[in-house]
Length: 323
Image 1 (tube, rainbow, N blue to C red):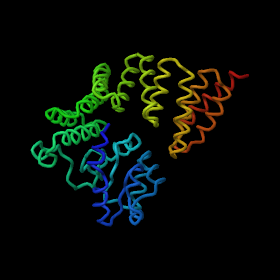
Image 2 (cartoon, rainbow, N blue to C red):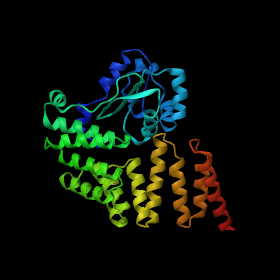
Image 3 (cartoon, rainbow, N blue to C red):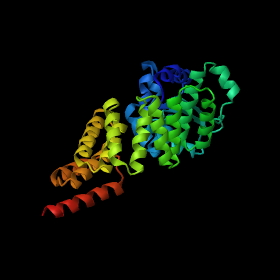
Image 4 (cartoon, rainbow, N blue to C red):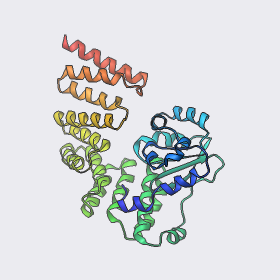
């Protein structure tokens, strides 16, 4: 959702370095661990601890009781949002800052985040294009936190610069999508792609909106283009959803198989992906493959008891059909 220039301009590393200089334990989301100098790794949870903590807030709070983190930095990637939501409602933590690469939480009593004033932003970011990128990327990170009105105010400020038009439109499309206004999201995302055809965020929202608006074949066509340019977990899952909406079972299975392979390579939890793949096999009449896939899914440690119960019921149903 952010242009490459903005990623470089507003790097999270100086913030992490400043916090590490305090010499106190710090929690960072798994994708930010590469930014930590080796000499400071003792202050940071391991990758395995971080992965478990962002997916399961209860694990984070257990870790916190032992480590006593002085601050938490989360990136806006989907995997961190469960923990971000939990921290927002926690009496122990306050959202201290929101910036283009993520969120800073500090112990309660620290100053809370407030909308920046336009005058101070003009002083910090005098270049209009740079300021627009900062405003839009920060707004994009406010949206999944439920701070939609604040996001809208930052986008209105960004619009006054007349810079970053595609990014502005795709973030407005994201805001419309979070509000369930799928037709508006579809129009805005298409307009964004008209200004920049390689805007992956715009194409992602466009695919989601097309699915929600019942236009499965168009969604599949756009999802294939997205995966061709950006083959990652989000785009492959979206391709599977689009294929399902278009009733293309073979493409759905292919996308989910690629998703499982990529997830295993990146040490991501596979339970959900394997469950979807098993269901896709079952719908396609491939009962043996469905059972084998469900068997793998049920062994995934992150699944809840209810999820395992559902998979067992599906397996029992398939076994009955086979006899």
